[in-house]
Length: 458
Image (tube, rainbow, N blue to C red; front, top):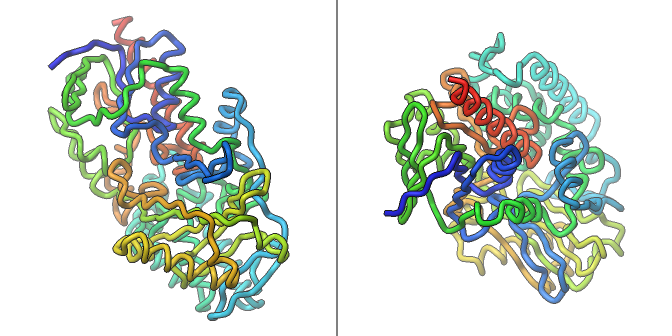
């Protein structure tokens, strides 16, 4: 087996890992980036729109919005533009078995339900403000919140059936998980890291406001182009040997010795790497308690965006359908028309058991339920089941199960000797988003730069 030598190895060529590598290379570091896939981008993935020239749709993470200053600044640095998510016309919401059109922010839920959602939302924001985002396990009420599932919080806080249904839907579309799966503390931290519930669920003024021209994978492609031959794809890391001031990172056919390593892959994939010596118990135990959400994303292509001529925005949601959320994902030109359908949580698990033909039929049934018979007349269908993706094992990101943060959360970002941790799950702001990925990559690079500087002085 050949052995190379570098200053730093970065494991994972998603946005976070590539940002870390770019920061290190900028200060003269000799960096290698090892990526298991045959491409860069991690949980961002573009797909060409058939018959539409250079137009693409995103099969993975795609949106940016106000307050996400790090990723927006990076886009400007890379010369990448944005365009607004289509938001004109009425939205659709399925309530009580019927689909309703509505305008503005809030579906027609009725005054009692709206008041119920409002008081629960206020309680959520009030509790979140008291949590230190960089150390949520130290909050005064952390033990109680972390012992409770988010389902328990919803049942305790919401007094109406539709109020509970609203927060169940929010859980699926935000975390790609069921409320009973995640810790109440994690839910509060995640939402607080974005500035509250509203920025997470809103389009205009929120996290879904803008799309990246050329698709979100352009970020990783541009960063990888800067790094050139330092990025090696189709190189899954199997082992990491480490000591006080050296690491050896091994793939199936090669090894690289370095002074530090940045691991920037989802927590379940970190757990698949053999560490020698083993990771400290707290770090290993934390990895066992950070599962990925379950999500299938389908872009359904039409000759034209027929819903626009009917006065619809293309946005729809339901707490009961497998397709829980829909957006207009057409190119900036408006042609062809694209509806992007999200299947999350238990619905993703259910539809993931089907073959693609039957899954496609179920998804089209739901789109017809929202938009009527024209939704069945497709020009193309593009999907990605992230739960079946070998090098992600789910999406949108990892979440903490009850008890994880208060018992082991301090190990989330803490370096272990020469081992440093990146990835959107380790961010303090905008956890799980592209902005969080950028923050985490920069923070890990800063740690490595400081560690190497201290060693030189010593």
